[in-house]
Length: 336
Ligand code: NAD
Ligand code: UFG
Image 1 (tube, helix red, strand yellow):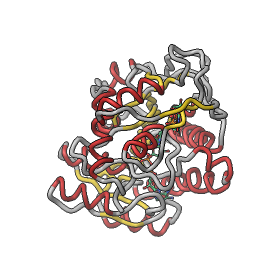
Image 2 (tube, rainbow, N blue to C red; image 1 turned 120 degrees about the horizontal axis):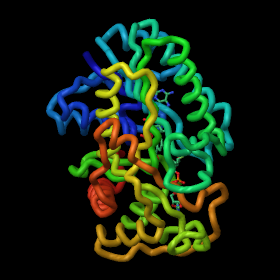
Image 3 (cartoon, protein in one colour; image 1 turned 90 degrees about the vertical axis):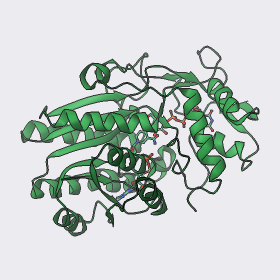
Image 4 (tube, rainbow, N blue to C red; image 1 turned 30 degrees about the vertical axis):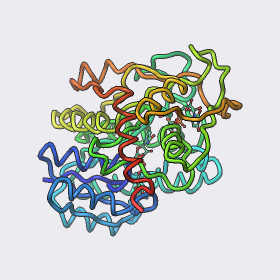
């Protein structure tokens, strides 16, 4: 039996393929290649020494999806496919709702018809909106502040409704904090299109000389050094959390929800200092105005995943930066 990885050529999906195969599981990857390249999976194939079944299919393409479920014996789905750029979602809300919400709806209907009722879903700490306090636990009130966040929240609601209405589904909602890092081989990593919106890929591109300096958004937050605090989590720890969640689903728990974070926050300046240690020289930066919509602090309480899944993130900030740097410096043009 195989695990279907939607978004399998993407940043997190390609690392999931790698870790699942390393753990002895079979995977089938699916992606429409709207934000990734087949080359990521080719690299994974080289690392594990075997080919990985890949289907270039859009999750909104019902017939295409049905074909994938017919072609393989699939018993669960890790659902990474989705559009994820917050700013872009504000300008193109219908595209985000169609891709993320409609896509997930079609996927669930095809899964049900194929008798597959186990899913690990990529949710996000964005469903906590602007949290009133930190650390954030899973029972915090849910809110969304942009169309991307609303798409994640709506999908969570859809999945909660489904499990309530149709017992037999087993679904894990995994709320990621700030995924970063890369496989320690330096062979796969995050390869964003265009100018990165997120801090770490931007810092990495400054370090290879693609941009002059990092704009630090806000130096006047009520935090220890005035800059924003986030819970950066290594992508390898993150995908190992998915494996633990999949094992949990095998015990038929219905719907479960976990934060995937480290349980500690680092400021932008602390991240820049860690990256400078990895690179061996300072990262040029300048403090500028706050970015609208950013929270001062967002970091997880990771106790629930530790207690119920036996999972903790073990790779620290220096490992995250060293691994990003290995990937970025050896692949300055990404997979291109
Ligand atoms: P990514 O863009 O690298 O990967 C997503 C993949 O999905 C891409 O390869 C893209 O081509 C594919 N895709 C998009 N729409 C599709 C569709 N309709 N049909 C088939 N494939 C489609 O992003 P990622 O960082 O690997 O994120 C994976 C998931 O995790 C996403 O759902 C994202 O919202 C979620 N998430 C990411 C972060 C983060 O900071 N990276 C944080 C929280 C949640
Ligand atoms: N930042 C900068 N300069 C930059 C980019 C970011 O100073 O060039 C700062 C931000 O202000 C913030 C921190 O770095 O304080 C992290 O910003 P990111 O854009 O990397 O990440 P966010 O926490 O804003 O958002 C990420 C994902 C969202 C997701 C959210 C919660 O991009 O999709 O985490 O999971 F919703």
